[in-house]
Image (cartoon, rainbow over all chains, first blue to last red; front, side, top):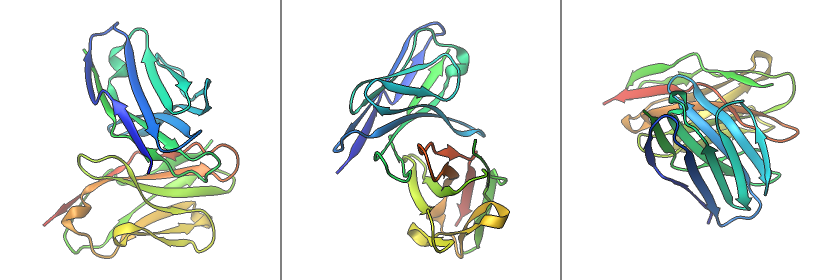
Length: 113
Length: 114
């Protein structure tokens, strides 16, 4: 069966520090991968998605970047965090060519102080 | 681009009451529609989905949703809620063709009191 893991689950970082959130999927090949941010009252905002290694599409211009160094690994990064980067980040995957059902990870809570 | 509106941000019901959560989308083409649920402390999971065919779809735990194309709506219903239905519910839509980016609504927090 397929599983998705995100880490760390909780992170507290000072403004201006770097960020790296990791997500890995097991039990499937060549998945579509996604990073969403969940904010209270704003639902889930799609940040990045990837259809293959090294292929990243950005949905929202911002202080974050994403990379996909391996087929089942998706990384969310920032060189210098802002206060506004605080939030709950969700990684998800879907089957290539599927109609669109997404499978979500447990999420990572980022607090920037 | 697609967009989704969920007009009820917070809903409080007593057990056995009926539930209907509104969802409207904006997109000119053919869409796929979803309802996801996030129970306290758990990850988002799919509740039900509509791709084509019968506009009334049934999901897990007694939930159903009806796609009304003329109203661009996909409302979620349950005849009798339980305390365990307390959760946040998200409506989502993607275009039926092209890459399937899932666009979510802002969510509705449902609290069911015993």
